[in-house]
Length: 84
Image: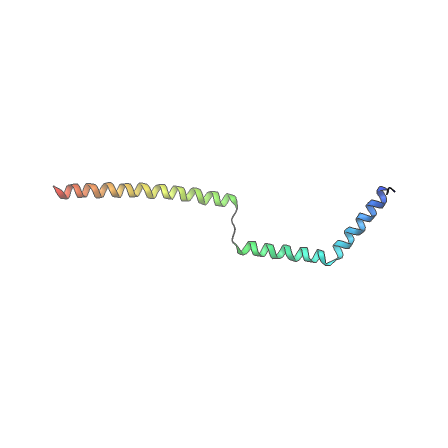
């Protein structure tokens, strides 16, 4: 037995109305709010923000290595002059 498109559409519409007026709809809304609140508390960052911070960290580490090398060279120079 085949159903007409009109009957299928009517049945689909009635099911949609039942779901929208049922506690399931409220549950979905509450779950969405709960999940959003939990994610906000996690203090997540966007990928763009993460990439910016990663680049900044890499640059800072490079500067630190350069400064450590300069300090080491200065210490060696000072030690060499003290021995004279």
